[in-house]
Length: 243
Image (cartoon, rainbow, N blue to C red):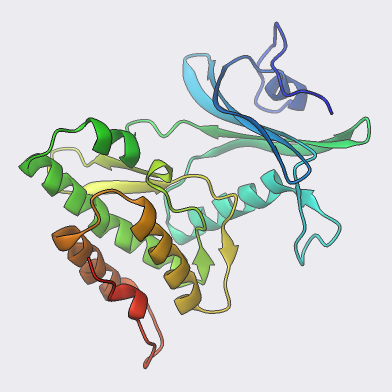
């Protein structure tokens, strides 16, 4: 298998596979071997702008649409497009393509940096405890509730709802309101029902999002139930978890 590594020199261009494939940068997700292939993400600077370049070799998934398999990057790019249609903020797709090289599938996905946004995981670990942290975290969970409801109402499940995949920025001139963005849509999939999509994501969020207890949990549920369209009579047990 060809190793994922940058070439010594490259001439960046947003519409050329080889330029992005051989782009120099810093690994933010070291190449890992799974799904019968290899996948990694680099942070690259081009003309003063920051991009994240995901490169894959033989990293294949099979779906009803692609029963013989397709690069998981193709599926992720499609999900990012779905999010844009639903009004969910995700990284802007700059370039996406795939090809066969020496009998192996190669794929690349380039997204623009979420300028001004901060990862919840990093912020939570670095922000000192106190009233400011509580106010911001409360705002994050209220806005995250609205964001997830947009996905779940169309039966889309994020599928990897960790604190490192949720980003936020404080709105200009505000200290109690935020914008939310989601990354890593590789495992995003459509479920048979709103309830199914909702339950899977919310339960996962409860395990992997920081500070989601007591008043913050109640803030999330209050905002979420105002926007989620669950069928009448649905047992919302996952929204009654003890925190």
